[in-house]
Length: 304
Image (cartoon, rainbow, N blue to C red; front, side):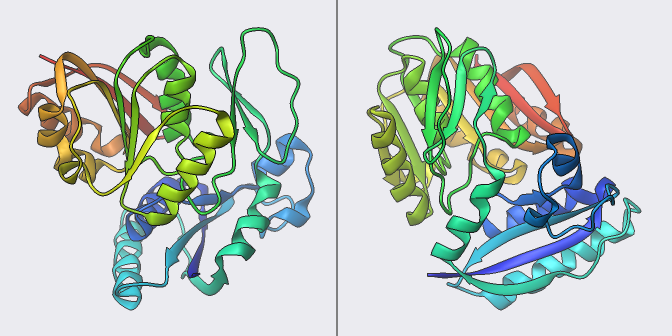
């Protein structure tokens, strides 16, 4: 399959808003070419589209599968970008579009993905990298391919760090929008069982299954939306998606959760934090903790 790559150069202040617009377009994640990553890691400028020494600008990228109404999606994105420009967050240039094959993208992005320690025990290790583990480390061997979730974005790292303290052995976990399967795999590594992951993207379903096998953990990965998937009542439900979808699925989340169960929601931009929290309360999911990082929010709620 081929994908429409969208690349938007913008000033740093606008990056989160632009990224959220791209995520809504693709239904998945996005990548950011950030010169600060190059500066701080002393890497090569050859792996970025940015001009050396220009930390005020970033390039936000997303990939839209060549299926359905691609032209309509492109028009909606440009309407969103026009709205963002009106907010005065900084300059947002016109998007650049190009077609890429899945295998081309799957190899090119690997230069950005290195072993990363998240929290106290979890260590994300790309399948093509090696890493010397310390006693007590729980490795997550990952090859996300075209699926969302490397663990390096705040939306995912917020969840991973919280899972370390929330997951207990034998806990029944459901991961909605599992993407690469990273949060489901982390839950299994921390002792959860059974673990179910669901996603509407067939590529994500395939990748999540492969990553589960790569890590030697049992995860039941299914295709579909939350309302289509039958599960027993869960101790923990995770949804690292976007605010509007989180609000939409709250009734289904509540109906699939045990009393006293927990819901960990992420992928929420700070501006929509209160709207999500209010919607949770309306469905008897009471927010008990809100964490924020880099303009992104994760909310932990419990079923009253």
